[in-house]
Image: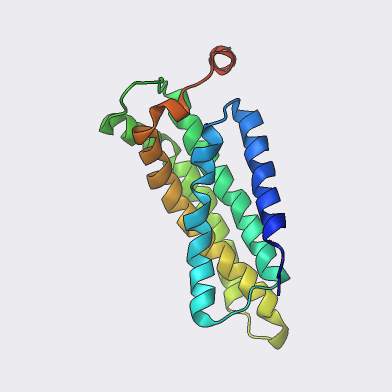
Length: 178
């Protein structure tokens, strides 16, 4: 059991926010990125809870790994939204959303698909000591698949609802033009 580890997970989330904020030169972009985490982690967590599977250290490691995959996929989508020139206060229409999703779809599908495909064989391991590998594979496969869905639906929807979150800072736009 991992009792008392909530503080550690919250600290890790704070560090992820700080790193994402530094890389994107924004305090709001990491919010959009981090909002993709709950659905991506909730699907395997809920299924574990329904099945009565305890969350141990190996399962927690799988959730951490999936968190990195989720952040990476979301950053790709956010980056595309920002590169498309979403400006503060401007409306994002369906055509903008289509182009955001379309331009990153192949990359996201390839990375997500290969990660899921790589995890699936471990679900079929039959030895008695393969429980850890199956738990890692389960969380990785479901979390990554959910992350793919979140990155092509949730993040572009946030761009439409909150375009100010995605507007590039003056310094970022200067770097993007070079």
